[in-house]
Length: 270
Ligand code: SF4
Image 1 (cartoon, rainbow, N blue to C red):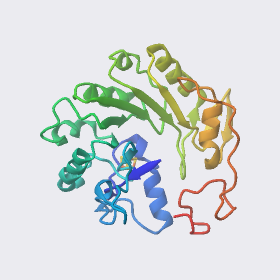
Image 2: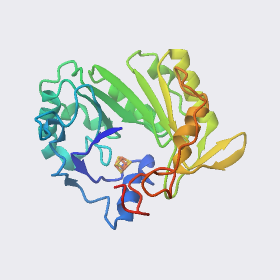
Image 3: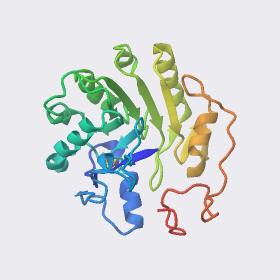
């Protein structure tokens, strides 16, 4: 996964933010996730070159933008135009732009946005029915070449049939909750979304189970390393993906954990 974080830090905004993973990870390094700052070392990543003069971000990359903040965060208003300039320059890279602040999108698009840019996919996150009903109609009324939504961390069953019927959404994702205070993800909620997407013929990705997964009334505690594998094994992806996937090996650097997420155990995998 290729990530570009031009700024870092955020303000909690709705129910899905309660156990924000960015706050949790910052706390591991004795930092405060509510401190919002421009990431100077990484700010111009899409237009940086390596020592051979090649783009650091190769053509054709899908670049997940602002994954430790919110792209339409008010506190980032003074930095966003520069970011739009870089996105405009890199028309050969696709930018995944995700937000909970759907009502701020329209007024914070670039002046030459028109019907949208081919290299930008606008995505809103919708953790429950209330937020889906607030945010999805807003995104439907914004011109964009590519649109999607992500139910994460999913906190309830969510019905999106009417929004999928618009034909405007090209991707839907769902994920459980990780780290401190994680709330359970229910198999039935994911199955319902999967069936809604399948019947509307919209691709659906079950990204991960989260730490607590409930199926057939039983609660499963799933280590982070297995969230994605278990989601893939569930058969709840549309179109279908290979469900016969092995569990991951231990981290090759420290051999201690099954995966690394910049964990603080050995400090080598930051
Ligand atoms: S909007 Fe995203 S980054 Fe910001 S507090 Fe909520 S979950 Fe965290």
